[in-house]
Amino acid sequence: MNKQRPKHLALHLIKLPLPGIVSILHRVSGLLLFCALPLLLLMLQYSLTSIETYTQLMDVLTNPLLKLLLLGLLWAFLHHFCAGLRYLAIDMHWVRDLAQARNSSKVVLVASLAMTVLVGVKLW
Image 1 (cartoon, rainbow, N blue to C red):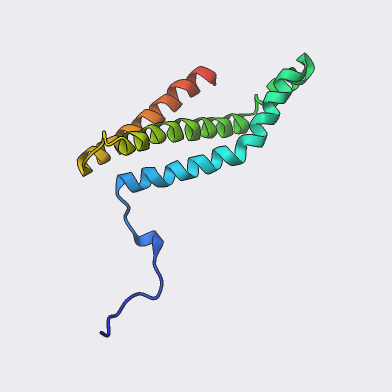
Image 2 (cartoon, helix red, strand yellow):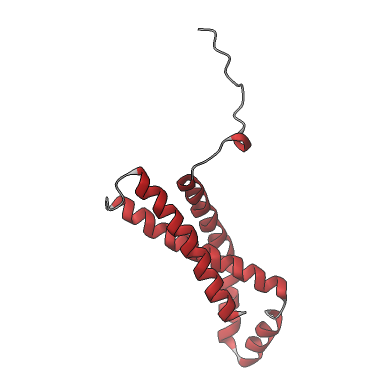
């Protein structure tokens, strides 16, 4: 048994199927939301403390880079939500075979991006 196996796994050469990409994006979006939670809570506190802090927060949020950051967090929330519904459907055995899993992955990506664009255009 002298097999030539690689000594390391080249992760950048592995081609993941679409459900695998959705799964990784679900984890990444959850991590982004968790890491951004203190910032979002601070923004909520500033918006509710007084009219002065609310006005200061609105002035800070006119920065286009911060708007892009919040748009990214909006995508993270919407993708995490849609993928979570997909995983719930898989756990409830509503998605039974590989074709349905691939189609539900496409639906998650399209729905999360479409909702992000719609809400982002409304809020920008």
